[in-house]
Image 1 (tube, one colour):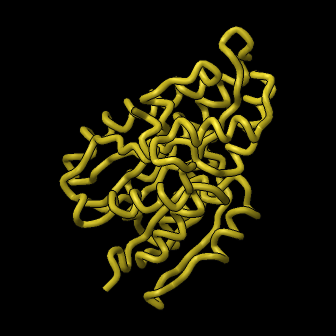
Image 2 (image 1 turned 45 degrees about the vertical axis):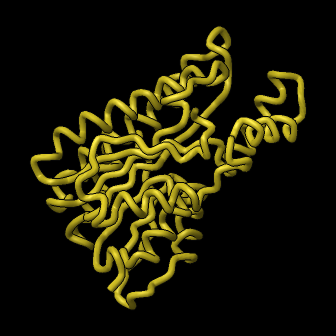
Length: 258
């Protein structure tokens, strides 16, 4: 029997990058995976890539804006009608922009907080009645929550908020034996990073390739983090072996956080 066979996993921001890798991991572990993303085409692409090793899984793609309560509540009602429950909730949706504090706009601040933190609040609140006792919640945080970056003050602050929210959620959901943890990825090779190295290069007057090499140089294990590295750790956090682990932040950074 597969590790999570028969379970229902709901994951936000799974239209690509880390979210897609986690969705693929959940499918390999036997879950029926509900892939939620603001980009419906990306969500559909992810679902098309998912395996069904148990022969019983029921994967689905839905469009959701995690910053809009009405949309989140509507989609959770759809989950209730079509699946009846959620065993694993993966709050992964996230965004970034890059500026020094003195150049930061109010819109950027709100955008980062709305998606990165408010989204976790809204999705978890709406999903709570569907969560099975003994289930799992995992939030995607960031290395920025343990090692701040001056070019990302708003993003850093939003991820510190995710870290605190994770710990508060762990205390609240413990009564239902639901564990709540977060992962803190380092320099992950994704489309988000592709954008960030251009922004940082412009800010520092160097090429994007030099920025990316700098990320590698800052990582003791000598390479970038890959989405699959994060997915493997999430796979552990939703496993039976992690049943007594809650309120923790797991760094997946190859030592770059040190």
